[in-house]
Image 1 (cartoon, one colour):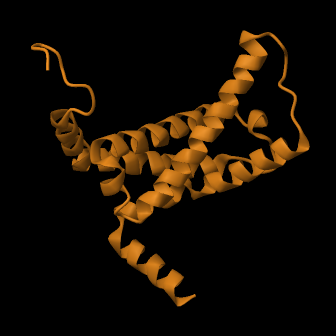
Image 2 (image 1 turned 135 degrees about the horizontal axis):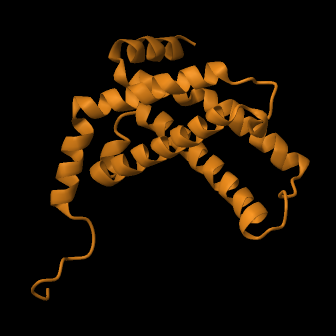
Length: 165
């Protein structure tokens, strides 16, 4: 290796610092607060209205929640690595919720680029895309289930319910 140059790849020291940060009770409290605020926002959302017809603050909050969930899982995957991260089965749920959030953000970004950056007006949609987006919106209700990972007794209860089926 050339002196003064860092080795390409993952820096173990950075990973250890991130692991300490992510394991801190304050970080857990922040994520739990985000989840609770998300629950409030979901309660305030009118299910009969499309996303763009909701109050502007609910649209902004949904965007912020999407970003936080995607960043949370991305940083966790980087800090702990996929093998360690997925040892906890509840992290699969977190990953799915974050994947849906990332998909929502990507579709919204494409719409914004199409409409404003390219000046082409509203993006054309098909009935299959609209029904897919409605399904994605319904799956957003799973976001509060991220709180389960903070409550071991609730995890045990839900696992017992699933096994009894």
